[in-house]
Image 1 (cartoon, rainbow, N blue to C red):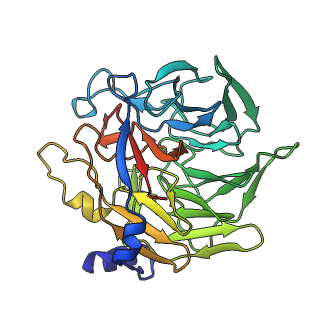
Image 2: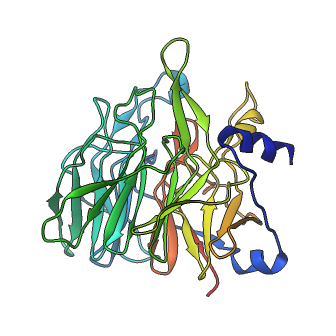
Length: 360
């Protein structure tokens, strides 16, 4: 409880926890894998979604020449991979208009929405729809975002894309306190800004979710300048939801932050949103200083939308070849939640592809 109290001080409020055998049994997923991406390293910050009956994963960044710990250079990519069936193998389907990573992506109708992101030179305002017609990719431009943003989060709620938080430049020392929406079904698409929740810090690496017409915003990390003028992170454990006409509602705080967890959260059953892993201060404090990184947390947290409470879900069994990861997208496809690639240790990516499946 001391750690919960400490985290509550970071953003205010006292977390609400509920853990019952009946509740957790309904939301315990089975973890499995798809074939790995055809890349030796894998990528963090990919885009992902479904189109033309296939799963598409695109872009992202890695350290292909030398590891980060050895001074390796981070490289952004434009490759797009397609998977036609859960038991199949990935094929290279084409290229993005430019190398890009750490933006927002989501499935909408029969297309994948891509918004924002960036590369080594800066962050982007661009947005588009990516479609697969069975033989090739096609891209449809969307209106550019009002502001460049990367490391934000987002989700499609009904026909509307939400993009929340992020940072305007790679070296920004303040996180964005902005939430932008785009009605994808409108004949005159135009980005609109909704007010940021009152009193909420800006944030990067938050987790989004969509449920029953609401847009959810969980955790992340605020940014502030240190004495040298470089960005430092302040981890957050607050939670919010928004619906047009109802505005923002503050929810029960998470028991701890889940920054950089795969986003958006998984919808389990009719009433739970499940978040896989992420990072928080106490977890980071346990990591050895002069030893190989042990990997990211296997923990799952479930939010009950009907009772406004959080439950700790017993962690599933992860294969050593496909461990938990952060800075990865999450997409629902073929009755499973898929987390392609991602970061399994600082600067270390994986080509493995995780799947989570909940009992009906």
